Length: 277
Image (cartoon, rainbow, N blue to C red; front, side, top):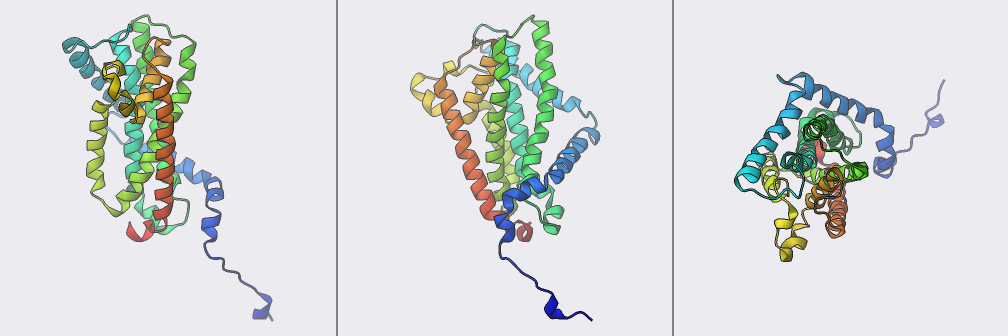
């Protein structure tokens, strides 16, 4: 007959906190499942499916070409204006989609959060990764534009993964911060579309950074997407468009800052998600 003394139980306080970063690896299959689920929902349960990832940047590009290229006649730095605009639309659309999805990801997975333990950081990160699928689909439009204009890139295009990585972490850092706020203050879901729309016009998507007065350029570089967008154009244009190490350096510093603040705030409030959500 078993004796209770033969069994020992040890309860460690905050064990999950100490093993949090290891748990991110342990729960990697959940990450794959969430990412695949989001991809399936996005492309299988919509009327136009994959075409949505094509139409949104394409229609925005057409509007920018008409307004900034034909009416305002802004310079395109020696490359066809549609390519000039779409080279900027690619990173911006990726950032905007990833940021929006990450910001709303916790609310969209409320049932999962309230029932089981896993590192909540997995949810917004999976949302950002899914936005990369839209990016790859949209990139096909850029290839078509290059073929149409007989525009051949050079070795500079090999640097695109670096700038895409910066855009990824810019979206993740800012998305983590807003996602944590969105759990407690649901009004933020109405603010997010406005912030994204405002950011589109504050970023050099339809125009070149060179038109910004020199005395304001350093301040303008505090928008991390400025250096990233300029980097995309520089890579696709073969080094013909404006791009400075100052803009890149400021963007990198801002991305690191956003990630540090986003992760800190997310981890600080994460333990309350299940109760508040």
